[in-house]
Each structure stands twice: as structure tokens, then as C-alpha cells.
Amino acid sequence: MRIYSLSLCMIAGIQAAAPKLCGVAEQGGILFGESDTHNVYFNNKRVSNNGVFTIGLAMDAPEKVSIKFCKKGIFGACQTFEYSVGLRKYPEQHVTVPERFVTWPDDIAKRIAQENDAIRAARDVLSDGVFFMEARPPLPLEAHRITSVYGARRVFNGQPRRPHNGIDFAGEIGTKFTTIAPGTVVLVGDFYLTGKTVFVDHGNRIISAYFHMDEIKVEVGNEVLYNTVLGTVGNTGRSSGPHLHLGIYWHQIALDPAFFIK
Ligand SMILES: [Zn+2]
Image (cartoon, rainbow, N blue to C red; front, side, top):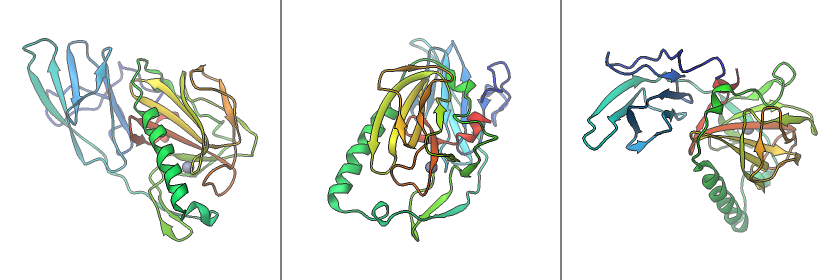
């Protein structure tokens, strides 16, 4: 996303009067823009603060989305504009993992539900900052190929499961990696499915997540900067080999990290 700046925002709406937006108008992408004069709403939720608004497009976002712009003030009139969203096709991927990561007993189900609650809470953080526009890869891309893409339909040991909600980088256990952008660590855990896990808030509803780590080098509340090492690549949780999983979320919606780091 570092190639974008707010002055280079060319996404046109379907109606000629629609404000031009920045970002990627595709499933898994993000739309964003700036307005000091309007509050902006998406799916009846306000998505602007501090003059910047962000809208995350889910993996299965429809081919048209509506965004409402309401003039600030008591008598502020609203206008709704539509934008086209590019639809994508996702590959299918078969993965082999130990059986305990495909079916599990009730006590593990309870643990997973509790961990998912903590993850949901971390993705609900709302703070200022627009660091996501200058995201960098957590590992050098030339040395760490992507082994699983966003949206891949996952089949674990022959059983269909939820689609992949991030991208995986191949890497050796113990390889240090960095945060994709400045922010604040909002969650650290050792979880059943995601293994050793870190979530970082970058402001304006954008959160990055790092899974299956071997070692965690940060704590909740730490401020991180470009090049801050979060930890090392590992093989913890539901993982079929050493790798780093990178997720990027807009609130609870998983976006395609490939749009941010290329
Ligand atoms: Zn992954």
C-alpha cells in the first residue's frame, strides 16, 4: 500500500458525483479517503474519524458496495454512492496436519472459543493513525516465497475448513521477522490453532496478525516501529511446517495482505 498517497486516489464511483477513493477496489482490498466536511458510513456504521475513513472489503464482498457521506452538523444532508468491487477466484489447497488440529474434543472446543473471543476483542480496537498506507513485508520477499495465498479454500486432511484468511511465507524456524508498520501490540498469546500469536494495531481500524511463531519478543502495550522484531518464524499451532502467517484485518474482516506489502 506504500505506493498510495491520499493525493493519488483514482477509484471512481458508479455515480459521477461520487468522491474518488484510494486503495484497491477488489475483494480483500481496502478503500480509504479523507474528508474534513463529512462523516462516512458503510453498512450503517460510521467508518471515519480524524478526517480519514477506511472500508475493508471482505473475501466475498458483493460486486457493488454503497458508501454514505453525511455532511457534518445537525442538518447535515446525506448522499449515498456506489462503487464497483472486483470479484476474485480463489484456489483450493490441501493441507496435511496432525489429526488433533482437524477434529477435537469438547474441552479443546471450549479453549478455541475463548481464544477466538480474545482475537475478536483485539480486532475491535479503534485508534488513530494511518500507518497501514506504508506497510512493509515482515520478511524479505525475495528470500521467503509465499506458500499459501489469501482466500485459498482449505481442505485439512481431506476435510473442508474455512478459507485461508492471510498469506503464508516459507521460512526457517528461528528467523526473525518485523512488524509491517508502526503500531501498538494489542494481543499476545499461545493459541491452539494459531500457535504463538501477536496482533498489532496500526490505527484507523487496521490490525496485523502474525501466527505460528517460535518465539515472541514483544508484550501487550509495546509500541513498535518499522524494523521492530516481533519474534521468530515457527511451527506452532495448526501448521504443516515452519512458516509465518500474516493476516491483516479491518475490524473483523480479513483483508488480503498482498495488497499492502507489494
Ligand atoms: Zn496461514
